[in-house]
Image (cartoon, rainbow, N blue to C red; front, side, top):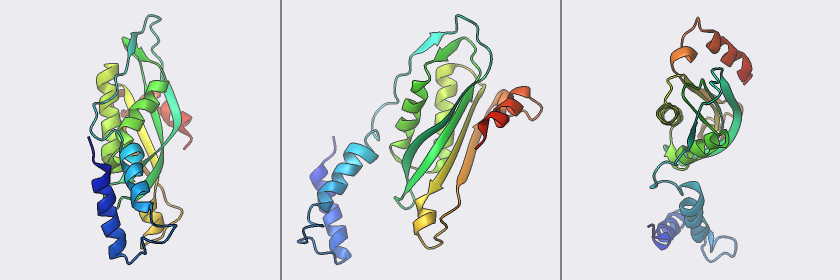
Length: 187
């Protein structure tokens, strides 16, 4: 699918433009390592279909909130190709279908494995879960530390960014489910 040697050559040229010595023992294999990292790790789901998430009938008619907190993952900022490290918080209220909790991490990992912006990432995860779970009662919050903020010009080591996409009961300010969700977050 991808030609690692092509990416390796591009990164070699990039390093040469920075006047880095590619004969140095520490640097000579860096283009190969970077190509491998992007293709096999950082962006490895870039051109794949979303994961298949098996849902199950809600045979026990569970109708209370399900909240999964602190799902840790990382992405690349598409503006600077710097990492951002984040935690996701996902809640939903089942209707006719439920999903095994481990599937949330799989969905999150799929959307994280591509250069991203946090706002779009939050919406993608939310919209995917609304479709799969067939319920509008879904909440997604992402709290992230962006290394483009930490390492670049502003060098702000302490800030984080929180984005949310809340629908139906989670968006209604008067909803008990919203109040419970916010109380349980503790982020």
